[in-house]
Image 1 (cartoon, helix red, strand yellow):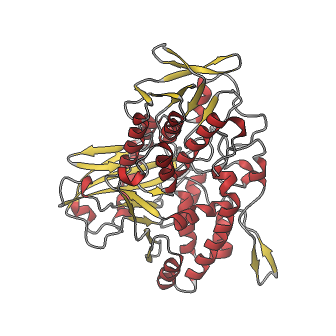
Image 2 (cartoon, helix red, strand yellow):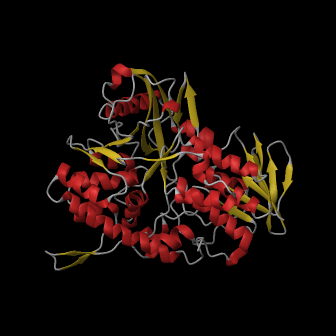
Image 3 (cartoon, one colour):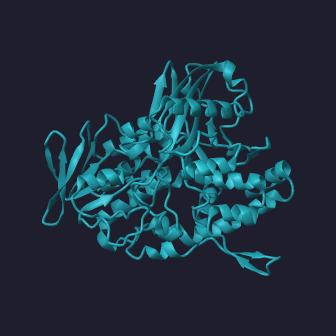
Length: 503
């Protein structure tokens, strides 16, 4: 039985902790804040409740597997999963709107043809077939296996297939998401639909590799799900599973150093000077913070990664308390696309050079009585992913984006201004305080191609005994990916270097 110290109580960390405890190890989690869940938190006021992190659950099979592998009670016995249908409603810059059914290619094709015309549905359906090919080529090495030293294979080869071009009498391979939109979708609204999946993680369509096509494919293939009571209920269930498997949690315990002995990780030091011995250390923290906890390089020389000091994607969120019930037929998720795509993308490239512009905005309206004081009110979360360089410390920036988000939300919520009781603005600084991520950044899922700039650091490090888990490590950000990272780290510790991922 090994002693394992886990830094941080995020979703990836808890997924690893539960699996390691079931394998017979003694696991202790040290969390600098007073609660668990990382970014999966809840804000409560006046009887209203809001998710302040992820609001929907992709690929629920990841968490189903976690609960199957760590106990007798399946996930559905502990939380209520609801399939969101329609999956989303999209309001485009020209005023066109379309609702897309959940996990139905035929239904999506029909809906797009009816709303956009001109064979738009068929082009999107053909795109999904190609996106599936990219998914099939990368699923195992990118999501189900540790990131091996030969990761450059993933970096150099674009898995998104080339497409025959009748006029050119040859095939043409898109290298970026923007090229897929321009060459294959050939409709500004379809392009906006495609790019919204990347923008949700702060990925720039002009630079994100074509392999980012797997993001809309995953939503299409595995559906969109909501946890009744809010996503915090999922965090609670994972935490309680850890406790039931005798994982120890120490809250208000900030780790200030990873201890080293004989060239390997040997424990952690806490802010109060306490030294904790351990055979393995698992870190669910921002890369900048992890570097500060160690005094040696953690990756091989020549490892290709995006500049860790570059501007990051952050989420700005408004929590809206509304009087009056949710109307019949209201859609759970509405994406209101930016009125000026080029201006939005330019702002991501040089955020400090221009005045704020209206971004793509997501409006979540759960049909969930648990989130309101009674049936005569509604709880709404409105958010956008922007740049960390937008000047969030300035009140005028917060005020400008508040106005943008409220204006966009009016496309999704009838009579919004008249119904608004109060709103709460949550800035990237709030996220940084809760998660410790520099600037309150949002980690994106790992992507193949792009010379490795869209991969995250491996779960193993150059310091034996020190492992990385969660959204800032392989296979990247998002609830499903964090759960996958927990499974990978547990496998590496339990089975050792010979571990080759789930079978």
